[in-house]
Length: 487
Image (cartoon, rainbow, N blue to C red; front, side, top):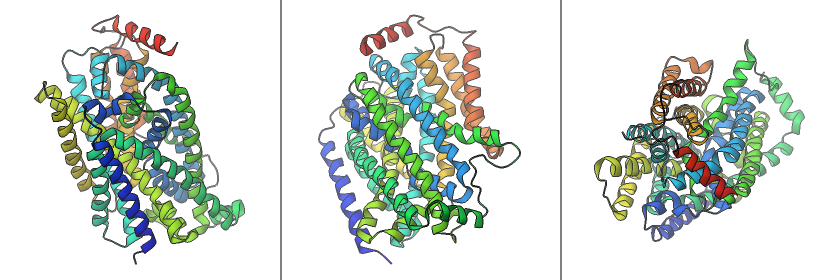
């Protein structure tokens, strides 16, 4: 049965998003505006947009569901992600902002080409293909989350729910580009933060606190230890915490660093982001734990819906509608970013690079918007299977970017010796190792990002001993610019 209060709440929410999209549609006149907001984003928008687009629907659905089923040891995912967030903001963000500004790069792919002085264009094209591959999978995970949310709330067919969720996201991303995405992320990130703290706090005191959780976990034989069971607990800890390695290669997060108006804004922006992610990840784990005594009958795939059930059990329909909109916020704030980065890859790295090098600003913006539609349709088709796991899809795509781009980003920012040949070889190796490792089923033993990341790093290190940069002084010029701008 459809809840009228929740329906009205969501309708108002959708209308507000469309309004933001339309407002920035009229302000988007250059391709740099559409892809990076003209590099004029403030510290709050940058921080909350980066973290909201980072966490996606898995923060309120996938991670609590994993903790609900398997216990406290799943907290290593949150620990790894927190460490990765801190390192990303403090070490990667400042240099990336300066280096991409100096090379006038609008995408990660174009940055790789410029930074490593690749005369062939292969580095740019291969990285763009990898972006399209993994972001299509990543976006489909968000649409799975939207489908499960709308199916639970409005009792509609899952496939119809996927279509409705995708339609709203496509419209405001299509219209407003990066500016619309970032400003909606500011609101969505704030709503997510409030919901992820409020809901488990109320649930905790309504279900017997620590004692109630402990008794329920004992009854269901769920481990209360943070140390995983099995013969190789350290391997499981490393595998789970390795999510943090993925941060260095996520284009939708890295593009936020590229868009901030000044590198000097980054320290305060980093503080905001780190506090946000610390509380959000911690309370997401608490959601999963508190749900154990609340919903002892839930098993399997429905575990990813415990936050939805919790909201409906504890709050009136109007308040519940607002809090459930936080799940939609988490989903939308990630998918819109992924669509935009994928659109950037098609527009800047294929169309402008290969098809029409002299394309004008209006033409590129149009191609960018058409690209959003194409990628969205493919992601929708992948999301139509209701048995898909949100966390499973996210972990594969997240691992793909970490294994393909993580070591290359680190080398681009911190290694004077790395050249385009070693970067390209490392990128391809990391991607192939990840795919083969997952296909062979070894992901159950060790998260595939680990062998992919290690293989990529080793190939770069080895080839750096046999090949040289095209311009050995180029990295020094970028570092001089970095020291000048951070002085």
